Image (cartoon, rainbow, N blue to C red; front, side):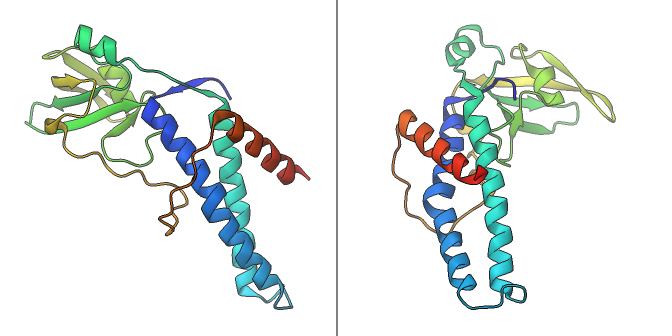
Length: 202
């Protein structure tokens, strides 16, 4: 996996999902799997089969998150946005088309959109067309259905009232446990991750 960039907030979200799975979801599913296994015949045990499959999916996601954490770097271009008033990585943007349709988008790394409305990957056609544009510029966006023009109304390095509320991140595995995972240092995170991946490989 090649190095890619995320915002500072995006890195925190990726790490939070890893923590949530590690401290909350996986132990809970593993405990349910152990309980289901103790009931006897596993071949016809629906609880056992379901939790075994879920645990496998969780392990795949943990491996994905581990790879992402190993191969991303944070990038903060807020100073550039404020100085140049142009659209860079991390910018909040308001755009409008000829029909008067207004959209609010934020350009972020491909690993941190988390299904949030308005958050677009820097690799998307929209982001590619908007980058380096300034206020009142015309942004040409190449789409599968043809080229479209969007006009840049507003740019900011931070969340502004005109942007509206940011959508809540939707993690792939959303637990009902509201307990906040303990904070971990980078060294602790690396150690736990390595131990966990060694366990998966055994």
